[in-house]
Image (cartoon, rainbow, N blue to C red; front, side, top):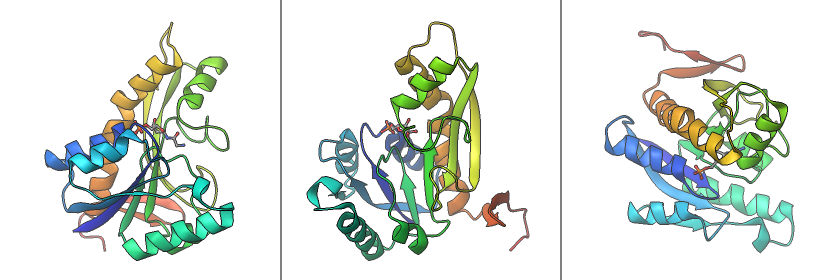
Length: 212
Ligand code: GAR
């Protein structure tokens, strides 16, 4: 069983997609041992509670400075000792120590086709606002491993989604979730849990049958 901690900040529809996929057998060999949120009001925490998954709130707001928060957050993750950390709409930067502790064991879902529309200032609805401002015709979502950069780690999977005329940021966000995020993230978790992917020279490769 691959032990997973999911980190969330808001609605938690990606967490819900993971829970549904596990229930329906599209993710196998995993157990979510905790859901961590920086936001006590996150709807995602209710979703965790209704599945009897412990919810933990840890927010930079409750610490005197970012360094102290980072230390506490990294220590909590070491204590939980998951095999995989899933950032499912988690809008807090991961402490460098945690990235080092969990090298190639933290995955993030980002609502664009990286390296477009990512990095500092690109999160949640803002990504879709910028996509519409720029007028691109195709966007999408990316699942990647987290490294010390911002949205820069090895890419696991991507899916393209068309931008349509008259899209608002909210309509586009919903389409990207439905057509890409809620499919890609559960699939990536299942691939990791079942040993189907590996990181070789900073790139994700699909393991063939018989590979070690
Ligand atoms: C999702 O669209 C996710 O890709 C995005 O936040 C949203 C959370 O929605 N994450 C980022 O922007 C990370 N840079 P959810 O809480 O309903 O899953």
